[in-house]
Image 1 (cartoon, rainbow, N blue to C red):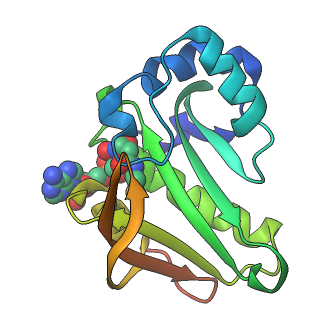
Image 2: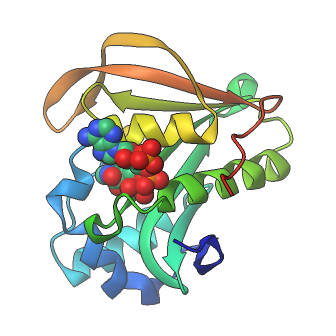
Length: 175
Ligand SMILES: CC(C)(COP(=O)(O)OP(=O)(O)OC[C@H]1O[C@@H](n2cnc3c(N)ncnc32)[C@H](O)[C@@H]1OP(=O)(O)O)[C@@H](O)C(=O)NCCC(=O)NCCS
């Protein structure tokens, strides 16, 4: 995948059809905290009420069409040094390096936009090997296993915790 085709931008209501294509797929939402979107109406409401007002949620775009998302949510008050990362892309785009490129872009952007931010955290289910690999390819450090940590799709699950600090170096692109 030529990384110049990939961009991050804010969501727009006019993304509803493209958003619905990937957000209506249970394989995409399986490890996400939000539920599969089932109609155009639900897609518009989600974009309007959740995605657009989010503090930092960007559409992962291929030639400006939405194929996924990446979000980084800084905590507030004294915890604003820390932010949680999450992401997904449509299944037809899996395995092409897209989220790795998108996460690298996002990491650079948020440390510039949120000057108090020091630490990014990713929580990943033990069986979600693709997501663990993405974090490792960007340069996140696996810190350990949090037992029975996160509630997802009706179950309390064990999760690996990864972090990336503002002082860490991203893994460079291979030539
Ligand atoms: C996980 C996800 C974000 C990865 O996105 P992607 O664009 O396919 O990621 P990349 O192509 O950049 O990298 C994926 C890496 O994982 C590897 N991988 C994928 N599935 C794997 C598996 N079952 N076992 C081991 N490695 C796996 C790929 O081979 C690739 O590594 P490589 O480049 O060394 O070959 C994507 O599959 C997705 O959207 N999943 C659903 C949502 C989700 O799980 N989000 C994360 C929640 S924590």
